[in-house]
Length: 268
Image 1: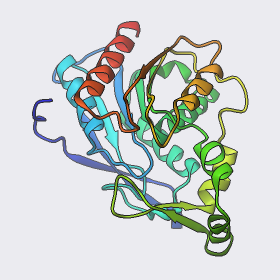
Image 2 (image 1 turned 60 degrees about the vertical axis):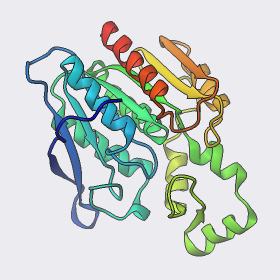
Image 3 (image 1 turned 180 degrees about the vertical axis):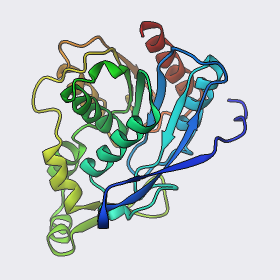
């Protein structure tokens, strides 16, 4: 992977009102020549930000092919305002909707990583409910973790974690990706139940490409297979990467990601 061009500048929008108001930081790359190609919209994972390898490479790919790219940080993440412990799927979904409404004029391809895939699926639900589903030309989902609070966290809570949730409103676990522990709040888990997408058939109305590592220690590949089973009416392609981990940030993984985006653009 070669060096990134000069970093795009941060712009900010205000989301929410009164005590819930927070500033959301975005980096908006605009292609030099106006293009009818869909805008690439990056939706990051839990505790990740828009400066990660995959996010940067998605923007670099947009520059190479001549289309726009939007990266942003959820509240409590990266350069955005707000307290991480206030974060819920509903809150981060509200911010994602605000970003695409503000920054995307035409069609877009949503690229969701881990939790960002859950946000992407909820985002398209909300757009379809508005009658704006055709704004989304495709979904690229990387190690998708829809419903991870209900499907992957709650069933595996220890008694100590349940007690911490009841008494403190959150519990912590060691992170493999940061010296700081992961924090999961009662609000996140309760709100997650209200945002579940694996309760019945999922209809996106657009092509979907799933990239999933088979050695993912955080989101088992069977979870991606379950998601695919919930999408009977969609054009879904899944790429299983035998030695792939959760991040899928190796050079070969990035090549597969860019190929998936290019294939999606060819269908748009």
